Length: 194
Image (tube, rainbow, N blue to C red; front, top):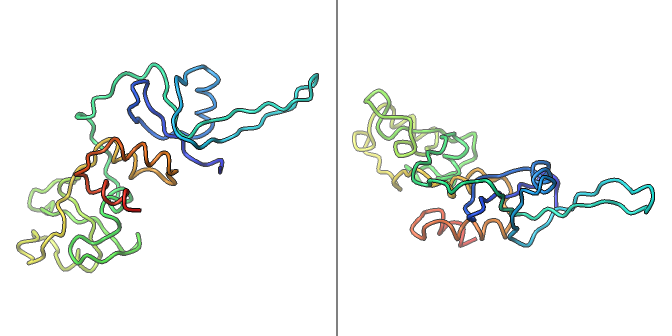
């Protein structure tokens, strides 16, 4: 396993709360904050050699760790930060007007109800658009521009946001996260059909 691999952190109730790096995970193990582990992947950190026994120290860090002292999260109160990278990932790098898939640099954030018409810069009012479609739509609504949206914009849940923010998600981590999102989520179908 690569040293920059993310570890999925859970609270003691088993709810996903975020991604941590191996250094943070090692500190949690050392301070006895890890309550239990899930998943099947491990990172093995190797330390120095004992002068007397000549044995090398090591620490096995699981890919999913639950930690103590984390209260139950209020999932309904969560508002994920809106960035272009998570927006484009939410929409699978697909323009929600023409339906084509593009690279990151060919995409833009489009406000369904333009800011100039009182629209807000929030998840439920933004979609991924290729630059051509965004320019064509301009400062109009999709109806005024005669451009139909292919999907309804939505605000991701806490767990959906963790999936969108994950860099390289291991199979056991993805399986755990998918089990915590609704089957009606657009992300559920996308990530269970891989």
